[in-house]
Image (tube, rainbow, N blue to C red):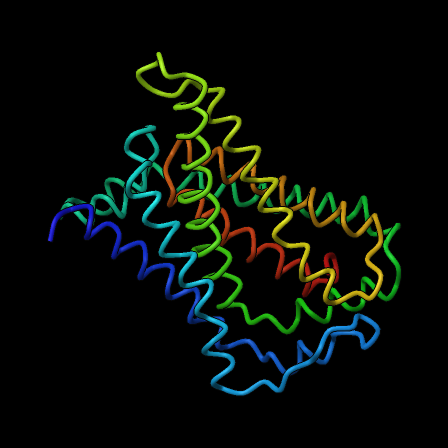
Length: 262
């Protein structure tokens, strides 16, 4: 088994742990939050249905992991810890440079989300705040940390951002031997925006009539964190973005328990 294959398996299995953690979610209670007026047909939640619901994210994870393994080295992006493990190298030596940036990024990202919430909360309806709060309480902490911190970073940074940087380089800067910073800025911003958009479906399902304020909050708050994570991935490596994402969820969960967030 060559190094690239081992790298793929390490990252894929890491993400798979996050996807499997979704089985901890009580889908029946979440489905109960869906308003009847939303026109969504509510299925009966069975163990088989929960397992089937994991197929799509698993396929997307496989595609994103493969894209990153193939293209990240070409554009100068990396997953230092996973790559070292795949090559049989040291662990702590490659992880240490990512710890402090990841921790700082986690606090900065969480602060941006909390500030966004403080700005938009006065414009959200009581129903919106209540439903979002109830939904957040139904997401187990392990799922938030593993799915958000691992799976979303593999999908949005390792897969999508890497692809965007590579595409910008090959389409617009063929004469350059490597992408210039503008390609990375483009990749960070667009992948962050997609990350923000990706959280809208939940809002549309939970709320019969999502308000403009809610849509803007979801997009801007998540995009703000996406920019932080994208910068960390660019400058320090994928694992620093994962550390930041996990820590961000810990801070937000703490803020929720203290009544300072949804």
